[in-house]
Length: 316
Length: 316
Image (tube, rainbow over all chains, first blue to last red; front, side, top):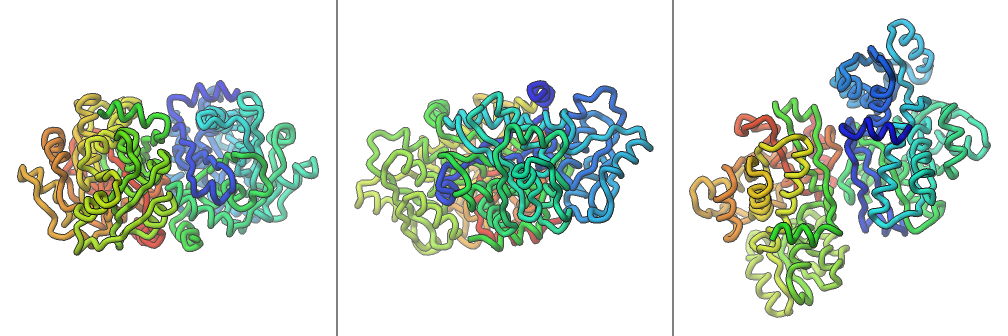
């Protein structure tokens, strides 16, 4: 399914660069390669899954999706490219730029309260009413396959650096990207090991992997890492992660902000807080990582200017 | 010479992406493609020219260069990769990060006063004393050839967007990049026209092209576009620009800062003020440009955090 998604995505997806810097290598104590998916269309890898779903599902009249903003924009652009309607359910506390850009891509946006309303139920209800097809953010095979195309590119690009063996750190919300990449690498680069990375206090995937069963976060708001805050790993994604991923890593919000500032200085890319957790783990938790090379996915760059200015103020 | 430089650079250079955004297209009123050389090694295209010179000159024991910071870092990294010494003469008012990064790449940095000292004379004197080879920032055929490799990539990447005809806006200091790209495109994409872009009050290239002779700027400091402030177009670069380039474009500092903020939002890349002039012209001077597509080179991203925060404050 990942290879089929790659075929459908080939004419439209941006093959994002694998970046590096001697300055980051020095901080991390090993070679650091950064897969810059913040440079993907709509500013995050989510375009891959959205386009994979739109192009892979038969007879779509329109789509509905719930999202903190990145899946929203990915689905909105994919729907626009397919000439169909998109309705997106977004939390009211999502970054303003994510809400505005989703609207500008032609989608109808419905806001909900992240703390008190269940977006899954809301999505199902609206889909029933409106005859739109629900595109789930992670627990959907076509979406996982789309995100998995990132893994195919990582395998190819790492080989260009003569790297066959590495831990691959992946920011983790519901686990669509981590599970997709882990499946791709199991086939294409079996000496690579995906490790999901989350912010402290929202480490449902790390705890679930450690316990061997899906557990939930106690709260679902109040993190600057809005892009990767989910209740728990997915029903479909978790068994894949159990089979193919290593243990989870956890970073602090302060480490995310410092990482955003270091990526500004040494990679010249914008990373949002949730997209920075993997590189943050590589830079500030190197004793929890093994190997000469670590690969980090920078998943998105959709951050408001005031939050980015806050990160720059943390500049070392 | 450009094709030979491409061969030497091939194993080490980063093939930077050609980025775009529907939001920028809308502002510009035409398709905008951005060649993101800020993602090049050392954060600017200057690595191309530096590496081209180091790999193309015979029997180098060490190099000396004068630079406001981007050529400095490009030459410093190229020297480090060739295992030879680098001495870099930099203006005391260059961004702190450029000076520090040049030192961190192993170069010896000598500071001079941009307003009162002649860097050409200082460079020649130090080269004589120390038996180092002077690598000029633009008036050196091997450097022009290295920068010209950007043009070969632009021709290939534009073709992937089915674009054969376009004005190609290039930030212009001494004209090494503009002349190099114009030579490459004359061979590879003859329906493309390079137009140099400069900041207001430092528009020596635009005035020189209009007058048909090299004229100088009245001052050499006091611009936020430090990377592209030079006295006049080069002796070697100017005749090439006269033959192959269209008329120059001029933008304001305020337009540069706004452009940096828009690139933050819609491309997720860091552009420094001098590297933003081409995209600024595309966005804010569209009536001075012709054609359905405009290609802009974002030449560098080496900007201090406080200057970038100043740009973010201009966010529309």
